[in-house]
Length: 156
Image 1 (tube, rainbow, N blue to C red):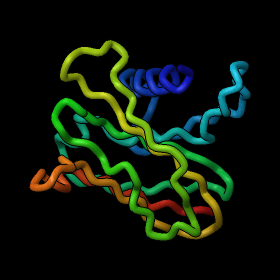
Image 2 (image 1 turned 30 degrees about the vertical axis):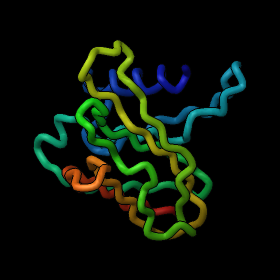
Image 3 (image 1 turned 90 degrees about the vertical axis):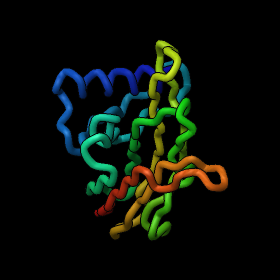
Image 4 (image 1 turned 180 degrees about the vertical axis):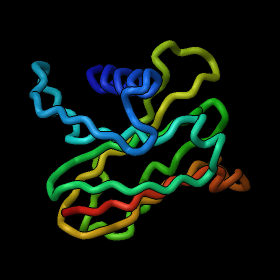
């Protein structure tokens, strides 16, 4: 529940202009009282449907420190049959590891409304690597790579 509240809060921040169009970070080092692990050190809300309406292939870069975790959130509409690749393609898994992938449905459950997909990563050691995600209809013959997201991660 806390993750959903965090997602809603972060998305609200985008719409009121408190989060820049480029990758944005917020820090939360508190320990929740319900024994849920603390939120990632950085929460990156990268794209919305509007971003992809302008450009189908988005490329970003982020700098993180060794040991930090961060989350990528991408707009996703399961009702269209499209979904992002569950397992991110990470060029160097010695530098970065994916820890979690979740689909978060819209809170108001309106039919056809988009939700988001989230991936959490942990920076393991210093270096640089690329994370690639693709928005596809996963069945045989379904459209592939309709949207792509590539993030260069520099771990210091």
